[in-house]
Image (cartoon, rainbow, N blue to C red; front, side):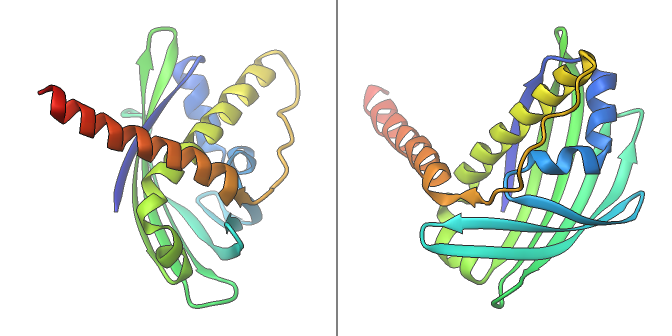
Length: 190
């Protein structure tokens, strides 16, 4: 499943690029993610915990930077993991490209996501909307940390709380309703 998102950060391109290349610095910004080991400069191990209603899913896996193009300001990360209890698998290839946008930086993110097991059964239809909500939270955290660092403050310490299905699911459901009614009323207007 290919999902495209983008977000803007009110900081110069070089600053955002430097920040996004520092995986230990950005990992706490992803809801439910926890970095457990730095294997090398380009490989990391971690856990992701998410809750979809009454179901908690815990994945352990690795993330590798497989491409880093300084000139094009493009980075590709491949992540894969398995459910700690269960047979579910998840893999994702994330391509992020940064471009100048006014006084800030536009980050374009393309995610190719494959899931199986409980995550696929419970959330396949909601994955694009949930991903957009999580990306918004991630973007806000990155922007806040860059701002804090520019003022000489330490980055905000974000607890590795699981991505909660109720609040994320509610926001994703609202997005789906807006999309549905937009198509419904847009088609009648045409």
